[in-house]
Length: 81
Image 1 (cartoon, helix red, strand yellow):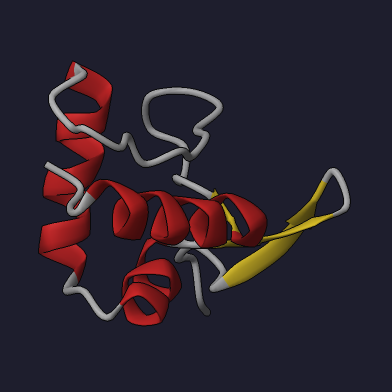
Image 2 (cartoon, one colour):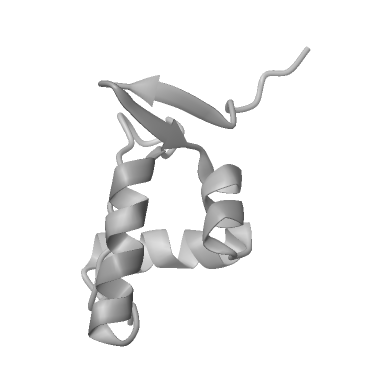
């Protein structure tokens, strides 16, 4: 029985990726993505990573359009931090 978070879901018409799949798509480890989530929440990134989470213990979701826009913005700004 798989009780973990699904790899992806469609939310409000957008394909959304879970943490593992988003990290894979960005070429990062899950732990590095977790650091970026914490820094984004704290406002310590030049280009904050957009995601949503319904409540504290709920899964974190990354809509694919938001990830693509984030990659473009990081390239334009010369880095995420």
